[in-house]
Length: 231
Ligand SMILES: Nc1ncnc2c1ncn2[C@@H]1O[C@H](COP(=O)(O)OP(=O)(O)OP(=O)(O)O)[C@@H](O)[C@H]1O
Ligand SMILES: [Mg+2]
Image (cartoon, rainbow, N blue to C red; front, side, top):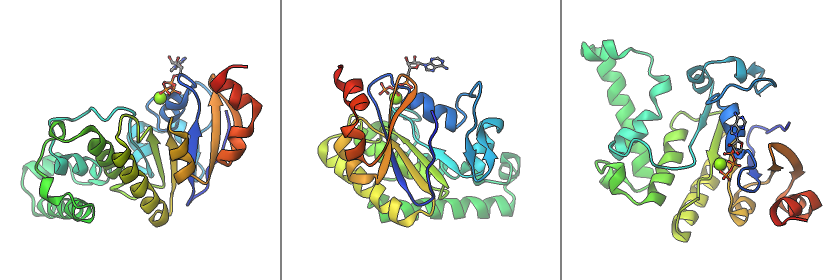
């Protein structure tokens, strides 16, 4: 497997169940450590860094199922997205130091401004288990973009969502794509959705690369058709 993504690009990854898409994102984001190979972001080899260092140099991601931290409120969940950048220790916070208080106020303000932009300020105090699955998926994308990442990895942002929720997530990704200077990499089973939001991408199967190009190019490759449909 080898491929590259440019800054400013929205890049899709397709492939049948078990193709290794999540494993690939896990290796890139250092959830697992690759046994060999290189994952490079602006010259840094991510495979050699600790997971928190990978976050700090600008890689952020969502996970396939939006079913974690369900007891957190929406506001607390988005605050999580700012954690890699919080330089003062929780010890400083516990002492109530002025710098820590100022930092916390600033963090809360930037979360509230994101919630306001997306018309969710009035529900900020709801807990995640109280909101629909599709809204949790959208919130997970927002959490992962709180620090303007250089690379945003999204693992199936639309799985399990209704068509209205999917449209809302597609709009958000297009909006992020036009604002972000970094790259967005999206794994999804919904090929129409990938075609909607991505300029190009790759198809994979059995842990390897089948084809690279625009969605139309991917879908015209015999190997891609066979991976989905059998020969
Ligand atoms: N470290 C590993 N070594 C060997 N095999 C692994 C490893 N991690 C995952 N696998 C296997 O690789 C396969 C691909 O899994 P993965 O979850 O990455 O697929 P996927 O393309 O994301 O599938 P889905 O579309 O269902 O989410 C699975 O059979 C999984 O058990
Ligand atoms: Mg997967």
